[in-house]
Image: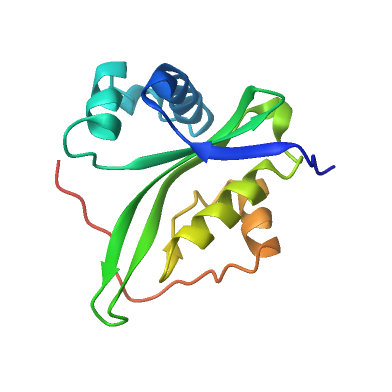
Length: 149
């Protein structure tokens, strides 16, 4: 069931605690709560400080937080254009299957002059179905993912 009154807006500093709470819910959902060590202050500094590392858009229904998308800019040297990396997309359970994620993804695509990219856990079948429905291309290639902490 799609809800027509989904408002998508840029997050403001007053939204930080709500963003943090929803991100904590995401960590629990992904069975990664032991890795969630970020504080509300961390989010405030990194999202709204002097040199923000990321941005968040918020979806609201009737003034209530329904979901968030946290993203940051990328640059493709091959395309010669910037793009967006979607780090987190999470919708409150009560608002799932109401078009909220679709509205957030549409807004991210609108903001990206290049490509919009993300990863999804292979067991998250609902998210995979959404991305397939949106026409996203799933690819597996010869790249190996690395991380330094």
